[in-house]
Each structure stands twice: as structure tokens, then as C-alpha cells.
Length: 119
Ligand SMILES: Nc1nc2c(ncn2[C@@H]2O[C@H](COP(=O)(O)OP(=O)(O)O)[C@@H](O)[C@H]2O)c(=O)[nH]1
Ligand SMILES: [Mg+2]
View 1 (spheres, protein in one colour):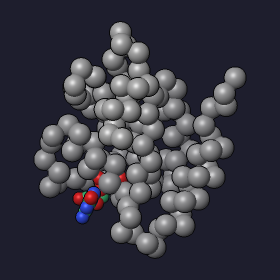
View 2 (tube, helix red, strand yellow):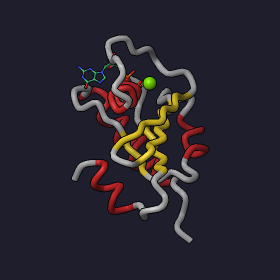
View 3 (tube, helix red, strand yellow):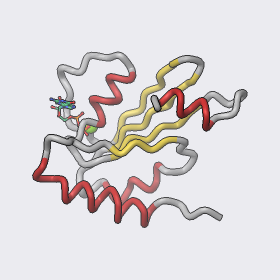
View 4 (tube, helix red, strand yellow):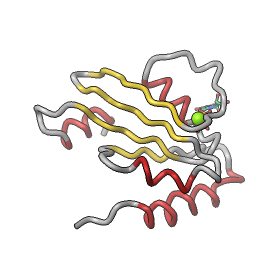
């Protein structure tokens, strides 16, 4: 299912603002994905210090896309961006086999621990 089809299922009609959070290791391709979503040039991408935010209009949705730096020292702050997030995309570089273990550890064990608990 494509992202927009998924959003249509999740979101009720009057509220078309969607907050989308991109997480993943540094160098995974998050900023490239953000720029691709915004139809921007992806030939000159520099490492992200802090975060980037872009608002993209697509098929009646306003996607507020948050791209957070993935360096080890920034990861403890990821949880500060979870609030009001509708969609979380965890980006993995499938060609970077050396970091599979690290991305698995960060993505599964660390994130499951940090996600807000259902009340
Ligand atoms: N070949 C290839 N390179 C990519 C792809 N996505 C990102 N890159 C490159 O990988 C590097 C890191 O990408 P970036 O978007 O900065 O990763 P981030 O640290 O997760 O934001 C950049 O040099 C990108 O040009 C992809 O799908 N294919
Ligand atoms: Mg980046």
C-alpha cells in the first residue's frame, strides 16, 4: 500500500494535516527521501545537523515531514519529536551491510523502548 493510501485510511476527512517523522542511522537516506518527497534536487545533500522540516502538499494532504539527524549522540533526542506524529518512517540503507546490526539494534530495541505507551 502506498503512503497516501495508508494516510487516507488513517485520517478522518476534516483533518488533513499529517505529521511524518523520518528516523534512521546517519547516512541512511532520510534527507534524500525528504527532498524527493518535496520534488527537490537530490544531487547535493549534506549531513544533517539538528533537523530539517518541509511541508509538502499531496492529494489534499499537507504532509509536515520532519527529518532528524541520525548520529549516535543525537539519537537520545529522537523521543522529543514523537508527540503528535501520525506516521513514523524508519529508513534503512539496504546496501550498507556493515551497519545492519546497528540499525536493527537502534530501530527495534531502542525505539520500542522509547515509543509512548498506549493508555
Ligand atoms: N545510491 C543511492 N544513494 C543514496 C540513496 N539515498 C541516499 N543516498 C546517498 O547517501 C548519502 C546519505 O544520504 P542522506 O540523505 O544525507 O542520509 P541521512 O543522513 O539519513 O539524511 C548521500 O550521499 C546520498 O546522496 C539511494 O537511494 N541510492
Ligand atoms: Mg540527513
